[in-house]
Image 1: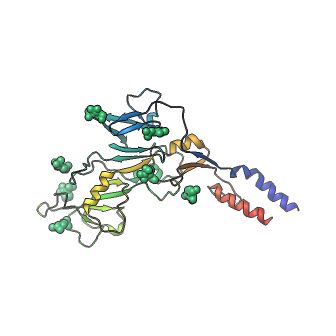
Image 2: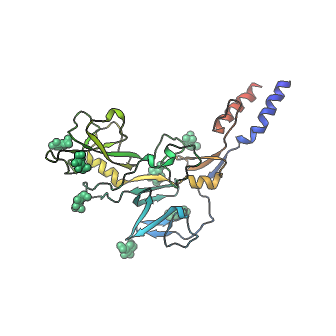
Image 3: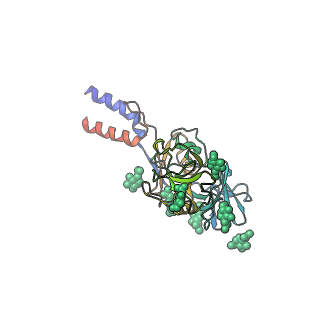
Length: 287
Ligand SMILES: *[C@@H]1O[C@H](CO)[C@@H](O)[C@H](O)[C@H]1NC(C)=O
Ligand SMILES: *[C@@H]1O[C@H](CO)[C@@H](O)[C@H](O)[C@H]1NC(C)=O
Ligand SMILES: *[C@@H]1O[C@H](CO)[C@@H](O)[C@H](O)[C@H]1NC(C)=O
Ligand SMILES: *[C@@H]1O[C@H](CO)[C@@H](O)[C@H](O)[C@H]1NC(C)=O
Ligand SMILES: *[C@@H]1O[C@H](CO)[C@@H](O)[C@H](O)[C@H]1NC(C)=O
Ligand SMILES: *[C@@H]1O[C@H](CO)[C@@H](O)[C@H](O)[C@H]1NC(C)=O
Ligand SMILES: *[C@@H]1O[C@H](CO)[C@@H](O)[C@H](O)[C@H]1NC(C)=O
């Protein structure tokens, strides 16, 4: 039947698109060097390097510093303490240097939020070349961290449970000073906004104990700051595995990277060939 041939001719050139590459997360052996160590971070290896490592070790975009046994990482305008590095899921956990574990009046020093990371808004943009990512690519709405927002208000806020009283830790609050400092977990959305309040600081945390819709105390928020926040470098192993032309995603359950092609189907192109594969299957059953 002629129309069957037409369908086959249409489909065949695209069939190579349905091949998928899956590969274990451990790739890229070319920069092998002995791991470096600094304080409690005992396994600094590719892509990371310390300033004094041999020049061919690691990747210069992932350089860490070591001073007084503390490993630090420069990120945008801040300098953060490295808490841990996880090479299986490509995440590094950082803590703001202003936060001291046993001092709940200690405050973060730097302003940092998801909008500093280009991948949160330009998810599909190949021009987003930042070395670190804030998003789990399998699900662009899933961030590796959420925010703690500090607000300075000219009056007491009693009608919103999201405004957490900080006076148990911060003795900045007093009527005589004429302002009140509150902390909030998550994002400040329009309906939470109170006239007379100003955002003083936004800082990330990945601590899972900060569930939304739950009344928090400031002590719990301080614990979350001490835990720190995760960011990822998975774009680098993705590029190493899939190259520039393929898309790449990371499955946090299996800890595997996955390459896939941009798929041009007759319906105007869907970006994921796993979906096109289904249409292909559907058509081959139909004809
Ligand atoms: C250090 O990291 C490398 C991967 O970069 C891994 O193969 C090795 O097992 C790690 N060693 C330790 C002691 O964690
Ligand atoms: C850093 O840690 C090492 C090993 O734990 C120790 O020998 C050294 O004295 C420490 N240095 C400083 C400056 O604390
Ligand atoms: C990455 O692995 C570490 C250690 O298993 C874990 O604590 C962390 O939550 C993982 N990160 C993500 C985003 O799954
Ligand atoms: C706790 O942190 C606050 C704010 O940074 C500081 O003023 C205070 O001296 C610190 N207390 C201790 C015991 O380090
Ligand atoms: C809070 O705002 C008031 C009035 O704008 C200002 O005088 C005060 O210094 C601020 N406090 C802090 C801790 O930012
Ligand atoms: C916070 O709580 C304390 C004690 O419960 C109270 O005295 C204070 O007025 C509250 N502060 C604010 C800013 O709501
Ligand atoms: C990750 O892999 C697991 C096991 O293969 C699979 O069940 C799950 O659907 C995958 N997750 C995503 C988001 O693809």
